[in-house]
Amino acid sequence: MGQQRTGQEGRQGSPLKSDRGATSISNGVVSKIAGIAAQEVEKVQMGGGTVAAVGGFLSSVGGAVTGGNAGGGGNLTSGVSVEVGEEEAAVDLTVAVEYGAQIPQTTQAVRDNVINRVENLTGLRVTEVNITVNDVQFPEERPQLGRQQEVERQAQEQERQA
Image (cartoon, rainbow, N blue to C red; front, side, top):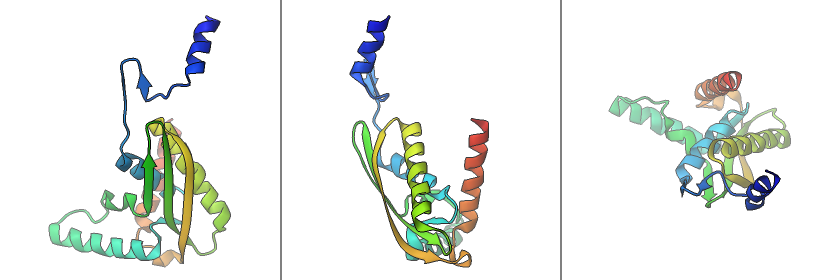
């Protein structure tokens, strides 16, 4: 029995590969997971101020014209860039942080949450999460605040259920 375990450990195979096939995770999937995970952290806005404001405006105009939901999932990958390999992923994020938040602690919380979510949900190993803070915002300037609070509530509910 010990040899069997050693053989599996020595292989250090990815959970995405087996004797019966392989699973590939697209960049878009990792981008969405990383974007949602980053937004789960309080006082963080994906894409930074200008991107979020323009995105929020365009989303609301598009929703009014098409009758669609302005709070749709289109903004989940704003400010997210990823490189996905067979077993690893690297993530670059651009965010705005709410005024008064300590940037080093906030970005570390984002980094930890993104790594945790991407690794647990995809089986990929995250090699790095680089974060660019390109804006500081006051709470009333954050057009996606309501959406972020909903995402945070959903994440907390999922953690309670797990």
